[in-house]
Length: 189
Image 1 (cartoon, one colour):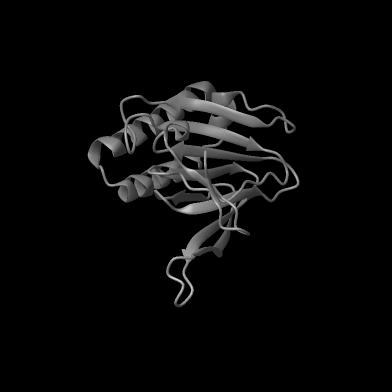
Image 2 (image 1 turned 30 degrees about the horizontal axis):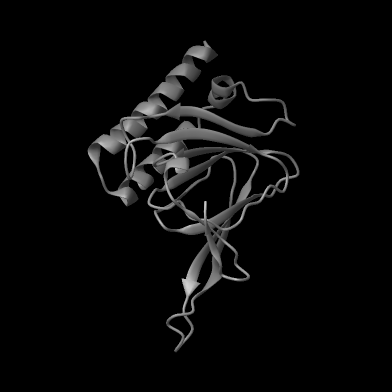
């Protein structure tokens, strides 16, 4: 019986995401509605373990759950995936280009840090990056980042964190940047 519930949960989740794309082209509204939909899916116990055959506690990596070639933002190709992060796993501040991304924590906890460009008085051509918001996502928590927003994530648990992610478009298809907060340098990746 759990397998039927799991299959239905995954299928309902994907169908709900498709419905969001079909009903609005506004990226902010898409991200908000997908985030609310993800929050409901994260309340269903067991669906992710069965859907991806979640590895034992020491298993890490990425699992793609659904690639959609009909719907997405800014073009077709949204991706539902799961990342299984090792303790302390961190990344450089980065953006998602012209796409948005929704993060939901299934297991563990991640710290999200938002960054923004700041222009000091009289220095309108020399911005620097500043960290302006930090928060922790625990199991069941959801957050999203709109096109162009800069952030980084870090697993803050002593064990793994399992994060469900919906990319408005698979990010390998979207030009985006990684930032060095000390120098302000950006590099395309």
